[in-house]
Amino acid sequence: MNKYKKITLDGLIYQNPTFMLVLGTCPTLGLISSAFSSMGMGLTVLVVLTLSNIIISALRKVIPGAVRIPCYIVIIATLVTFARMFLEKFVPDLYDSLGGFLALIVVNCIILGRAEAFANKNGVLESAVDGVANGLGFTLALTIMGVICEFLGKGSLFGLQIMEFKIGMLATPAGAFLVYGICIAVFVYIIDGFERWRRVKANKLARENLLNAKEAA
Image (cartoon, rainbow, N blue to C red):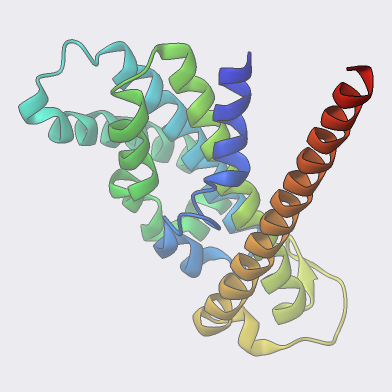
């Protein structure tokens, strides 16, 4: 259970693909001006990443090492094609809003990176958990930034107008880049603060245990 907990926490927090590893910046900067588009892209990547991890892990002993990257791309491209067909048929508004970024999922470095670094070396269940965790980490990061950019840049939230005040620059790619940088800084600051608190707590507990051992002796 600790193994799966570590995989989950790494994907969501400690190795968050967006805030910690700064991967997938192309769709991030291109789509976070809209909360709907950013969340939709995140969920699409989550599904493709999880399924590709499962398939690649299941076939890891069959795929020849010399051609593994082309094989990964074929698998991912097939999944993306199915995802595009599904969105075009059932969620046309999201399909239109994602535009060309949807096709770029095929070469998304998060998906290829997890395939090469994790799914190729671990079992199916572990790879599925890794895919879900990293996909959720990516989705949450994009959605948070999408909410910030749309709310402050357009005065709306998921297309619903909330207020008249707006900072138009935040709805542009330049504004998205600024929000992205600030979110990374805040995220890293919070994680570092938590790690410092945890180390202080561990040291305090160790000292208390040492004192109790001396008194018992």
